[in-house]
Amino acid sequence: MDGEALSLKIQEEIKQKLKNCMIRPSVAVIQVGSDPASDSYIKRKEKACSAVGVYFRHFKFEDDTPELTIINKIKELNNDEYVNGILVQLPIPERYNEKRILNSISNSKDVDGLTDINTGRMINGRKTLVPCTPLGVMRILKEYEIPLEGKRVVIVGRSKLVGKPLFQLMLAADATVTVCHSHTVDLPSITKEADILICAAGVPKMITEDMVKKDAVVIDVGINRVDGKLCGDVDFDKVSKKASYITPVPKGVGPMTVAMLLENIVTCYENKPVTK
Ligand code: NAP
Image 1: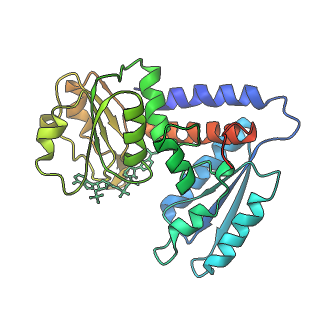
Image 2: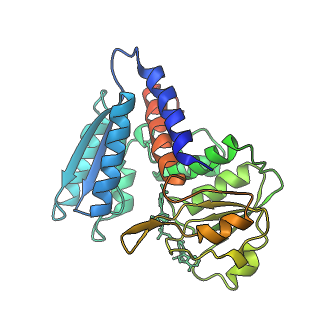
């Protein structure tokens, strides 16, 4: 499944939509500390924003910045009518109260869909902003016309960014969902039952051929660097011979996350979410 091609198609649609806008949508990215992976993710987001005509503002704070200074900047951006979306690049250094910082983002500008209010709205099936990576997974499955209703979906990973929201989205799509994590006993016996297996654990190539049912759909969210090379959580070379569909790493879910961020920014710009 080609996430890169689909992402470019979505980006082109957004570019066309924004072509004649008098005032461009804008997004503000808050970065705290200096994590090299975050630097590269932010660069990628900036490039995609400028390619479609979204104004990108980057606020970088040293990791000794008082939490209140960061929250005050977010509040200032909340009140700036020319800022449509705000996101805090995760992870932030551990000594900060991540929840407090995320929850200071206005719910209507929360392009990562991570405030408690937006999370609650999603759980209750209300219209809201949804985290970009799970949205990207749902979108790629839709593009390839993979049916979800009644299917057995297994998600490996229960993070707030990926596993938990995916669980809600899959449930809403009438799949039967199992979520696994680091305490799950006999993981292979569960993954082998999956019609659709989604791995977001951050463990290189942990999903091996013997853990996958023949003709399963396999979505690899993991991004790991091994010996300087990117790889996912799935042993792609072997599993791809057994799966009916599989996403590669890179060029799978990663580009879809960026495309969904752009869609969320446009949603905020058009003031679509019914959330205050
Ligand atoms: P995370 O917060 O570290 O969560 C990892 C999850 O995997 C946890 O729930 C953990 O269980 C579980 N886990 C870890 N080792 C496991 C094992 N051996 N067996 C079963 N479960 C295991 O990570 P994340 O933010 O969700 O990210 C996961 C991966 O996706 C990373 O590689 C990250 O780089 C990648 N990612 C990619 C994108 C993208 O755009 N493609 C976006 C976000 C993240 P516990 O809860 O028990 O600890």
